[in-house]
Length: 151
Image (tube, rainbow, N blue to C red; front, side, top):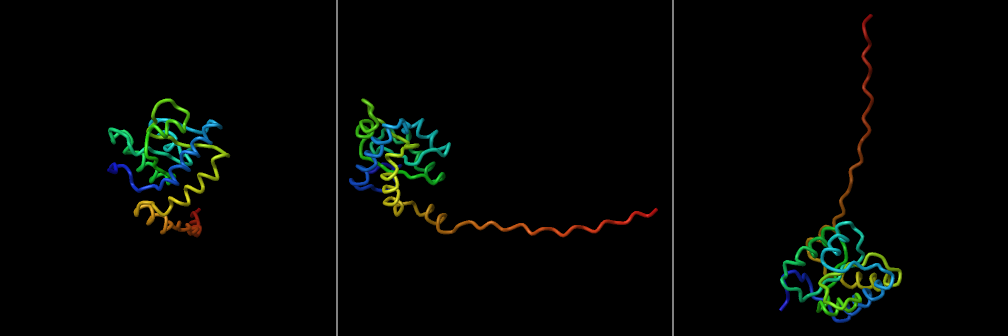
């Protein structure tokens, strides 16, 4: 049964690529492990890909992450288990969330994942992306004529 925080389903191919991206990014120390670290990375705008496990209990621990990613327009992908995510990050314990910050080795995989999950964005994010906000140019004001002082 899908959890409340899981916004879309991810194919096995994409989740495997996400785990491989975590493995590659781990080698260059570009991974933030755990919910707290991932949240900080998202809020600071440093994450390029956020990987979230689908089997987190209780759900409330990670419910804020999909909303943060949507607000900050960051790529989010789900993997089936915490154990697989922890193993990919080089941990001996399960891990609920990981943020990849920088990794030259994982960049092609991250771009591939982003292109495949872009069609699965929530409707609210698609609307915001489809209608770019236009900035109105400020019209220069004409200088006011100076009043002549009576002598």
